[in-house]
Structures are given as C-alpha cells and as structure tokens.
Image (cartoon, rainbow over all chains, first blue to last red; front, top):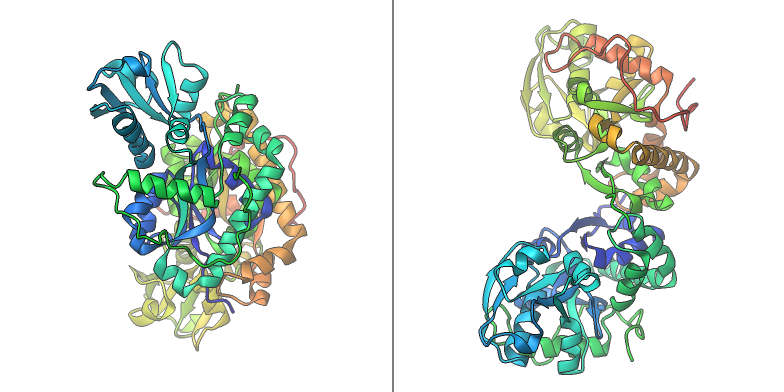
Length: 292
Length: 292
C-alpha cells in the first residue's frame, strides 16, 4: 500500500505556460502530480514557504532564495530575442525619453520589472521615477512617459500599439548581452529533493516530455488556445514560437549574466561562483531546443 | 477572435471523484474548462456565491439554493446500496445504542451528516446529542458512543474497524427507502445557463464522456490511484465499483425522497412539486448506468 503523496507542483496559470499545461494533460502526467495553478508571484511565495514542493519561480525570486532551492534542469520560460509579452511602451521613441522619465510599472512580475529597470538605467543611462499603475496600456501611460507591460496586455500592445512605441525587453537584453533572457526557472525545495529524489526525477521527466510533446503538436496547442484566448491563431502561433521552455547552456549563461548585472539591486542575492546548484537529474532530456 | 472565457468548473478533490478527473484528463476536456479543485463544501459555497459557473454541489446545499441553480442531467455522486465511505461507526452494535447517544460528527459534509441524523432519528428512533470532533476514528469515538465518518477515514474504518461496528449509511438508506442515495449533484448557475447555454452543453457532454471513459478504463483508473492513495488496489476497485456517477430516474426518485424526508431539518428547503429543475441538455448521455 502506497504511503507517498503526489508531489505538490506549481503551474503558471498564464498564456505563456499554456503549452506546458497542454503537454501535461495530453500525456496524462497531470494524474501523478498535485498541480496548483496560480500566478507566478503566488507560486514563488508558496514554493519558498514550503506549501509547494516544486515548480516554476520567477528568476529574481529564485536568485533571492537560491539557498533553499535546487534548479530543475532543462526547463525554463525564456526567449532568445523578442518575447512579445514583456515590453516597454512609450509615448515617444526611446531616444526622446527625458533623463528622468516617469515609468509606470503595471505588473508584480519582479523579473520583467527588473529587466525593464536594468535596460532603462544601465543600458540607456536614465534615472527614472517609478510608480505602480493599472495594468492596461492607457491607464499606465496616463501619468507616465512610458510603462513596463507584461503578459496579455503587453502582447496586445505589440499587436495594437495605437501610436505608442513598443520596445521588446527580451530583444533588448539579447542585443545588449548577446544572450537569451530567462524569465522563470523550475526549482525544487532542497529538503524535498533530498527526501524524494525519485519523485523529483519523475516530475522532471514529465515536464521534459510535456515540452517535447507541445512542440511536436504545436498546431493543436494553437487551435486549442485560440478557442479561449483573446488573440488570433496567427498571433498565438508566433507567441508560442518565440517562447522557449528550455534551459540550455546558452540559457544558463544568460541567467548568470542577469544575476551579475542585477547584483546591484537589493532584491537579488549574488549566485555562488559555481552556481546555480542543480537537482542531479542525469542527462538533459531536451537539450538542443533553443540552442543556436 | 474569441471573446469567451473558459467556464469556471468545480471538481471535488477527493478520492471519490478521482475517476471523473481521470476521464477529463485522458479525454483532454480539461483544456476547455477552468477547473477548480477543492473540497465539496468550498465548491458549493463558491458556486452559490457566483465564483464558479458550474460544478458538483452537495445535495443538501443544492436543496438550500435550488432557486439559483439548474441541475445538470445524468451525473451525480451516488450509491445504490453500500458506498463504503459514509459510515456510522459505533463501539457497540446499533441496537445497543442508548436512547440519547452521544454522536461525534467528523465532517463538514452536510449531506452525509444529515443522512446519519435521519437514519439515527427517523429510522432508529434515537434522540442523539451531537458534537463535532476530530476526523480520525479514535478521537471521534473518544467521547462519543458513535461517530459519523465520511471519506478516507470512513473507508479506512470499513477495512479496519478495529473492533468497532460499521454501519454503511448508503446501504441503510437503500434498505429504508428502496432507493439510491445521491450525495452530490452537478448544477449550473441559472444566470450562467441562460447566457452561455452552448458552453454548458459542452461541459455536460465532457462530463458524460469522462464518466463513460473512466468506466471503460477502470483498471487503469485503479492502477493510477493505487500509486498515490493509501488503499490497496482491490479496495480501490471495490470502492470505484460501488460509487455511481449517474443521475438516472431511479436516482432522481432517491433525491426527491431525500428532500422529502429531510424537509423537517432547517437547512433544507422543500423541492417544488415538479422539481428539481434541469438545464435542458437534450437526451441523456449515459442513461442506463446504475439502473437496475
């Protein structure tokens, strides 16, 4: 008689992670996890608090809590160039922004917001004043020179800028560093990994299978998403194509570069020299995707 | 471009509804609903509050709020005889219980608890004193003559009574009335059914397909459950075989009989004479199952 319980696994309940959910459903792997769907901030908090065993966590949150966590190999939410859904939207071209622009922050996504700050401050030498605002483009720009939009609203702004200028922050990161931008990683609590290594390996395999499956069946993923999501099928196909769910060596270099450049910001703890520390899952399952 | 959102559907996150979840995963129907897994009480409250559009609701809760709800045809959680997981557990045989026994109530399941009260009071003429207690058999019986156990703990008591007497309350109901006991029904908010009849039909079909699929593939359901649930495969197979997910005419007669016999209890509102009122979904999808 079994005494194990299903691992408590987080899932980002946003459009960007729909392909991964699709794969977990279609493979049936969902039946072997206790999946908790929530926004990324909530998932990160719950993983750190020990209410979840394993799951996605925003890169910035991972860097704050790396002591308690091990990275799961091979999977991430990333982009090697434009990601379409993490944008700086401004009324004027970037070059015309004042030295101390007013920047509206519309999201609680720490990684996307910090990426926007780094690009504005380190790459373009601005010293912005930041203020939080409503999530839609119009209210964000009402009292600001520019706004960091993330998620559906950012994707909508990319397709319908309505006269505004849209700067893709993952594309900016790539131009600036030559590397992919990693927005979220998968991590397991160190104590859970030590007590349940077999279950963590199973979940790792399930997620790698899910990513492989959603790539193989991407037309079906798009058709399924287009039934419910407020975007045209072509827009969804382009978006899912831009998104990478891979943590290759190149992505790891991008992750380390982000940790280095973000080290001056109070919320980030530097990685150890040989970090990040991985859960020992054996050979990479989907190496190759997202590499050039 | 789509402007609909996925229907917000409840799912009972207990072992008794695992076969239905299994079917929703295997068919992929899960991708077209926004499924919220929670204990039955929470689901009922959220359906009544309008935080869910559709889903399972305890029969007693349905009877309290039938004005705002329409029944979904064909599906239920029921038993036509023993259900194994809704039990009155007593230290002595039932006949030896005093006229005013102390009864521990271990669950917030209103239907199971009310069934226990009706059997004790109406069928066996006792006038119990009730008190809530911890959920496990030992602490429930510590200060009581008997306890109403529901769910995993009740199923465990059935398999390991440890000298106690276990009375299956669904079997008692069947002996008493000649009818099946309906523990939960599926209902849709009346306003949602009027504004989204096509989506409700789709969900109805998906649940009927799920029930049919889990019956066809019951060996796989048992094998999947046995990996994680604290019961032997044989016990799980017996349990899933006793459970019915059907709302046939016979089950409806049982539902109406329960409403009639429960009418003296303050928490239940009598059904209208031609009730319950159904969502008009057309022909029954799985008629036949559970009928004699």
